[in-house]
Length: 325
Ligand SMILES: [Zn+2]
Image (tube, rainbow, N blue to C red):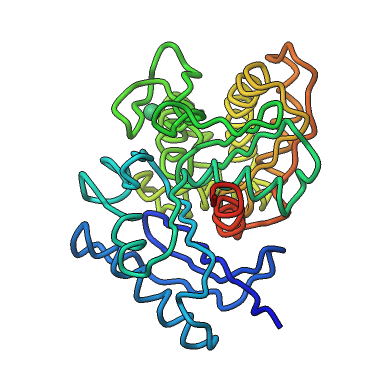
């Protein structure tokens, strides 16, 4: 009997690295999650190798029998070198990944942008089965996207074709993005930067309105303690000001979504990322409501990804299935 071959899926974020083994149908076994080892730029590759070895031991699989390794990671990437270049959420200039892993384990190893992976995963295992025009958008710590257009995965010259978090949605550039430029979508609506938007708006509003809102006691009067979680929880509790701000964020998200729809003309947009997955209705309802004010193309179905927070893992599996010879 042929032994079943497993694929190693790696989802590398700024804080956590998650791994799983998968068969080609996307059945996951042995999910593991660790904090990223940031002790040196080579430590991350070593950490992934160590987890793969222990996953194999625990599941009685010989490493040489693995099909390959797929790594979904936040960028920017250098696809040819299989490395991260000045990653925004890791304190290194260069993080080599595919070479150390493939040399050490003797396995084909593929690196893809996490959102590129996610759209592949959506098409292979999620809501995008059978579709040729899909966009995946993440609204989490940052904002990013992946797109399949006419059945073609969009990659770009360096693998960063769909950096939609850095679309300009505010030409006045009131807020500065983590990338250093002003007015980008991510600077207003991502989990990390949304507090900056709220603070800016609160400073513009009447103090009495602010002090009456639920946000005020939750940050104990100190707006520097504000997080996106506090805002969305206050909105869930029915706080008027929070609901108004969530609605304003929805308008900005709708501008971002409309730009994406006008550029790629998808028949489905799935949305992931912690901000979306934890506040599905508050994030997606205003987008559906306001997107028609900005879009010229026919509005596609917009939904949260059914793959949840495993979308990167499924994407890494799908990347190996797509790119292996
Ligand atoms: Zn930016």
